[in-house]
Length: 155
Image (cartoon, rainbow, N blue to C red; front, side, top):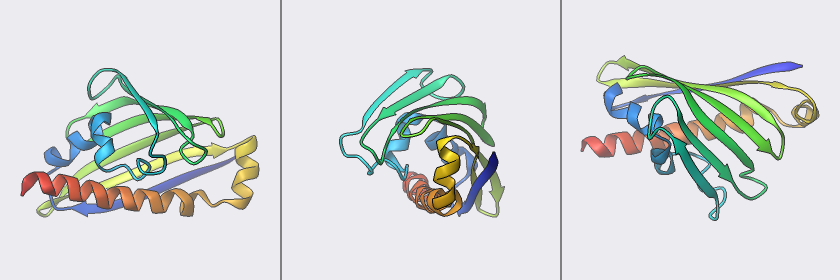
């Protein structure tokens, strides 16, 4: 099994308290998540808490979007959020994902990290696809969009 980590960060010109809520509430993800546009007919459902620990999100979509769930399993406002990300299609995988929000100058350094293991079909898939390149670009798009949403709120 080959473990992998994908991490990206961006300096967002807003206070941690202004950025944190956009990640801590899955309803807000439609405003910035890089995967929202992958399937215009994506089915979404929310359960559990509105935000923070116990908030749950499930999606089901086309081949690109796949199917899976996310649950916030740790939330320390305004510094850190831990998410249990589980894909059920096209491949089964659990990828612990986290966000940190660290004050830096007049803004916030947001770091987005996903870890996992390439095993089973994922191991074969990893021979042809580089998770760092595949997911890293999406993380960069997402952080750029998150910055736009968080700073729009302040203007």
